[in-house]
Amino acid sequence: MPECYAVIGNPIAHSKSPLIHAAFARQTGADLDYGRLLAEPDDFEEVVHRFFADEGRGLNVTVPFKEQAFRLVDECSPGAAAAGAVNTLIPLPGGRLRGDNTDGVGLVSDLRENHGFAFAGQRVLLLGAGGAARGLLRPLMATGLKELLIANRTVAGATALATAVADLGAVRGCGFTDLGGTDFDLIINATSAGLAGAVPPLPLRCLAPGAWTYDLVYGDTPTPFCCWGLTQGAARALDGLGMLVEQAAESFRLWRGVMPQTAPVIELLRSTQ
Figure 1: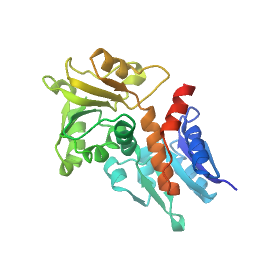
Figure 2: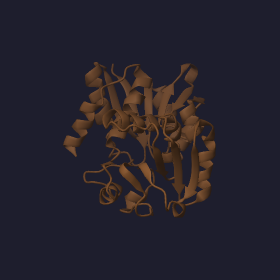
Figure 3: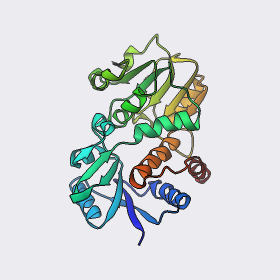
């Protein structure tokens, strides 16, 4: 019988995770079935426990349940603890669950391995202070960057995130209105502004020469933030499709002990957009 995995969220019908993990399974010769689970906020825990009671081997968690998954697990990785959010559930003996967060690893892997971005000595601006941003903090701080600045509509949210990882290096938080007069080598958009066809309120000329932009979301056409980056002269304006595949690969490794090749899967997804 194939081993069972799934992604849980709401909505979930659009998820590309089954396609990604089916490709990983073909690569590695794994006999597995990866499905989609729709849950409501009031029955999320019940759906999760039922899945693992039925011999499920691993779950990915997507919006809006990552924080709820963090509260559910019995133990978690340092990255998940720092994020306060879990996107990967791993069953342990005795019905216990371990949580991990592979989003930050996926982002860093996509930028560094797939696109050749060199983090060392770079000034990085992270836009947003919600769950998506929190999941990126520890992996970003481990890259050797010169400084991480977190900007958010509410200054308190940004400074709280910065304080949480202040022991890892140079990091501070501010509001969007405090960004004037500073330029950055990489700007990462972890806000939801693009869902409404908008971009965060950034000042002009905040990109250093040769700077890159990166949007966590992706689409069949360039996202609003990617378009903004190109109009501002970014050397590269990337979307988050590669991050999606890379974080999935890290989940696959945590479950099965083998890291699949990601480049062919990213190419497959691009070709089907």
